[in-house]
Image (cartoon, rainbow, N blue to C red):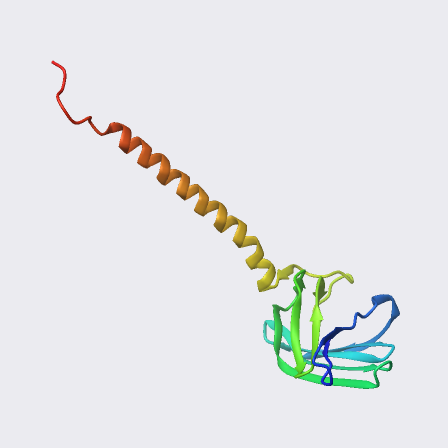
Length: 170
């Protein structure tokens, strides 16, 4: 979680240790809930299923920083991380969700699936946009460099075929 201390204006990071969390939730037909609680706070997710897709429809979080006597609360109601039903949403990149003006949730290396879980295994992975774009950038650079080399070679061949000016031998 990323906090902005309103007194000093500086960013502060609070990492949640997965081994020090307690999870609860329920799975319904059209809506599922996951609550992750930890010392000093919680993160609450609501997943909503509509026809062939599902998404996170609400994220709510709270964090108390005892050492500074500060409390942070935030909520985001939006259609986040849409995925086909039966598939899982996977993102290795950092994704940041603004919960309040001074409170953000940042997730990295995450995989989620809320509906149609078979044999307690994730379904087919759907990559997030950030991860897909990272794969295209090296390919685009490679194609561009290949095109440039072909243009240079073609120019050299055309230049060598050009007849020399001046008198020709008989």
